[in-house]
Amino acid sequence: MRKSTPLITIVAIVTVGFLYLPLVAVAVFSVNATRYGLVWRGFTLDWYIKLFHNEFILEAAWNTLVLAVVSTIVATILGTILAIGMDRFPWGRKANTFLDLVLHIPVVIPDIILAAALVVAFGLLRFTSSLFEPGLFNMVIGHITFQISFVALVVRSRLVSIGRDVEEAARDLFASTPYLLWRVTFPMLLPGIVAGAMLAFTLSLDDFVISFFTAGPDSVTLPLFIFAAVRRGVTPQIHALSTLVVLITVIMIIGMERFTRK
Image 1: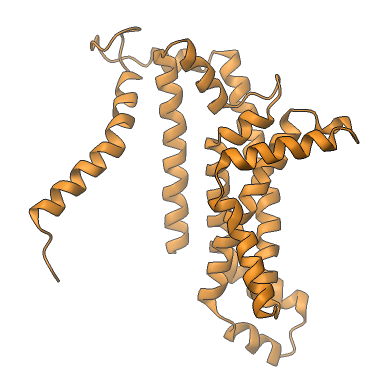
Image 2: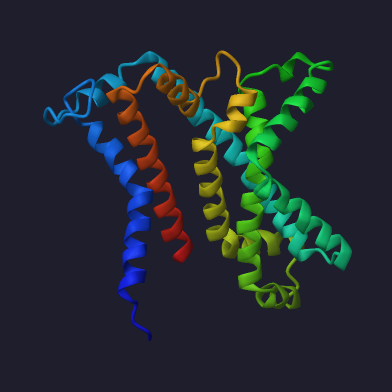
């Protein structure tokens, strides 16, 4: 095995520092006793305590949680079905290439383009029903549109890794299709499904662009609240709120990695 050169080590350390030092700084200022400025005045948890007594923040946190949970459940179900259909159905070469392209578009397309397209679509649907007014319902649909692709990609990679030998053996033993899906395929897919769901939940939790374009006055989420608050000035409560959001995201990613490894 080749040893890493000092230059590569230095570049790696600088890169990691460039990525994570701002997050560490935000966490440090979230427990700083001073309200304004960069001077350290001592350790305190008052900003976190005030955070949990702020009605606007609690409402935004509830909207964020509802949005993430509902959209993740729907996207996980649809994404899993899509992955199984794409991998186990005998599509032709051209059809398979087309489906792959359609599946990857929401992943690679800029969020601003997808958000603008959703605004146009909801604007047209608004003529048929008032249900599509800007608000939480539109936000759920918007999040599902990009979450499905991430779930399907993760589940499909799991399908490719487990192969078809076990399923073919179950067919040889006269297993019906429902039995095969529920007792053979689903247990082997479970790590991929959970990993895809956790990834979708994390993406929904941190999303700003699509939420900003589809939100209503009563459906403000934590990213939208932080954006509006920062424009009026950065306060220690914003540092505390940002630290909690990052911490939850990191915990979700670590849990997804550990569960997938098992």
